[in-house]
Figure (spheres, rainbow over the protein chains, first blue to last red):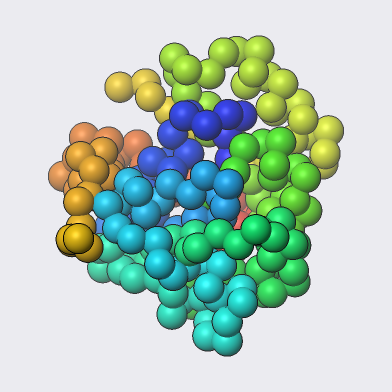
Length: 168
Length: 42
């Protein structure tokens, strides 16, 4: 999940989607991959002592660094962000860890950084099944939404669709 | 320092199965699960 710019509601859509899946009886997970501006733990009002980055430098599987916020919905916060966060995300362990988490789940939703960052990080743009673009009904201009879509398509990212947030 | 959860109101709504938003997220979930590109559920 990505958005053209912060504030489009990417984290909200991640949590709403994962919660809906869990409510439908599916096992879901949200992983905060936005190391520049981690937001999942803030929205949930929880600490960020351990999370994705802990897994990437540690030995245990990714699920060990998350917790269920509702039954069947696992949330993994970003964890402490090291100075070399880019290098950590580029490591093969990131994709491998998320894929391993996905083996026991119906859907893993990655709360990603902005479109620009996702395109720069091949592990995020090409390492998984696809990308959903979140735009906000009032905060995202049509031109910004078009440009973001074009950028993703130009980069040959598998764009699964666009979510229009903030309509209600 | 309290480490207790101070979940935001928005998160509470998103996690609430009775929320009016839930139907839209269920529709999104159904659409995603129906995509061939995304791992099918058992």
